[in-house]
Image (tube, rainbow, N blue to C red; front, side, top):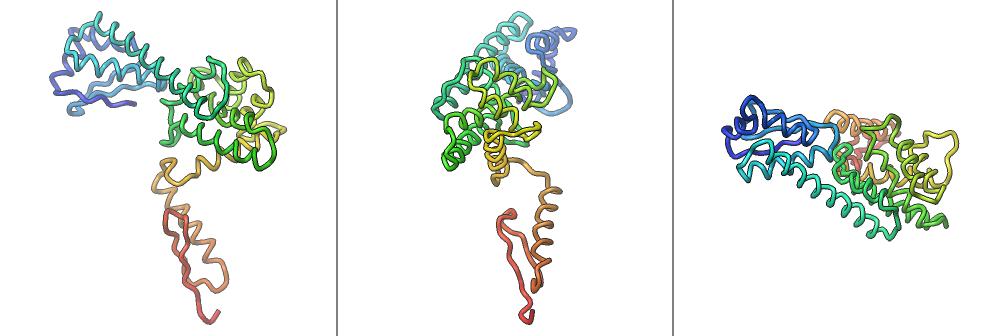
Length: 267
């Protein structure tokens, strides 16, 4: 969901419109659900598609600022917002490819740009893919493998998430099918398909992508973590340290990056 602030609760009635015509027009034009409830000075946009949600957010923000809210104006604003978001998506994908120095088909660039509006446990999917591409390139360099192929695999490994709300299957399999349409290198397709090690055979590209993916996901602060799982992880680290002979007590600190240990002098 996305929350859009409004200047006053009086605006809620104007967004609904006579007999609900405005809210119906907005939902039809953007493909999202507009939730207007008792939340003060805010309305909520609900959709599984993050791009549609962003189009609706931009359109609604402009409508509120403009003040002229009726079905024809809603359709006009929604069309303009879609053009703006589409341009932003293309630019985001292009900048990521330029930043990494890789050549991609325009269709793959558009799909890559859609990841700007997708998150996984609070981590932005496009930023994550860029990180994975950099690290995949570094790993390939150390192994003497093709750096350009490794970067492409890293950048495109999660591209299936751009359409996984619309297509059945795992994002790795969906991504491989997408990449196969516009990428000549079979190694890149293979690496995307294998990056979760779900296939029967895994090539060097699958292992490189998997390692880089794990490093980016595990980076401290990269992803949100529930308090319960965070405390469990710290307790597990302390239990491991406590099992060593001579250890009286251990304390996990610095978000689990450091263990302080009290020892028994006589042990």
